[in-house]
Amino acid sequence: MAIGEERDAHDLLQRIARSPRFAGSAAEADARRFCRARLEAAGLTCSESEFEYSQWPARWGPPAAAAAQVVTILIAARTARNGEPLTALAVVVSLLVVFAIVSRNARKRWPLSFPFMRAKAINLVASRGRPTLWLVAHIDSKSQTVPMLYRIGSVVLLNLLTVIAIGALLAQVAGVSAVRPYWLLISLLVGITAVPSMLCLIRNDSPGAVDNASGVAAVLLAVRQLPPEKPVGVLLTSAEELGLAGARAWVARSDASGKVLNCDTVDDVGKWLCMHTGARPNLSSRVATTARELGFNLRARRLIPGILADSVAFSDAGFEAVTISRGSLATLARIHTRRDNSTALASSGVREAAVLLAALTMELG
Image (spheres, rainbow, N blue to C red):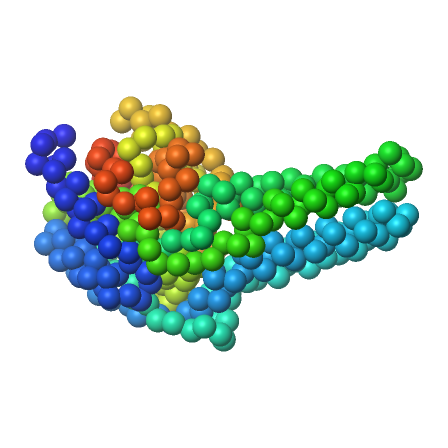
């Protein structure tokens, strides 16, 4: 890649990530105006789509869900220690089923419909021709009291301990009395494991360089690499960090269809991933094949537990959608912290992501 393009990638990253960009903020609006100018210069027609949503599910949903899971296991542990493992098993299974149903509904519907903590934000929509492929990246950023890595670890371990608790109940119901003394240990571990999730509160002091100025910059560069007559759609969403509200609002209003390549979190190091939810879409295999032809060592897999991305909202709406990302454990450790700034990135990952997105647009669009 030419030196000018290297400098442009770095300049884009620096410009977008020069300050925190909470959904609906003046800083986010400034970054959106900059991106709009770049897209219009590339020949795309741009419009802004305002939407209203609730911040409550994103701010308080995860801590509440973790607390509910802890209470469920503690109730089961106490009941099992009192010699009633069958009752405990019935209670824990019933509560977990209820929580799963409520959680699924909350993720899909509450960001737009929940009546409390209402707010407004704006998506940037750009297109050329009649696009059958949409390049998506969220422009907003946030910080948290707990880094992403620790929150994901908390979610994964809490789910693992829940499975262990259910296994212990089944063993006790089957007459394995040796399980009974371990309930105090299980209760203690569940309580400790849930702390990062329960104390994970949203703030606005991260510049969001890797999450997700990198994805936005990659999309802008990819569009510039396309022939001027190539149809393409671009969606820069807001409030992704608040329950995927922007993506859900767009699919609820739009009659667009086709495939979605969501670019979210592109570090200079780590593994390339193409992530999906639900059944693996054909798009995932196409991305992996194109990446391999370009020399990318990319792995297709399900979305990492504890992580939400805009592709989830598109998949829920019936689009073929995947999220392209690159990173490592160190990347997760600095996401949603002040350390997620442009000084930590040389933008090589952004340039490579742009090449991959442009190639996929030429092939699939």
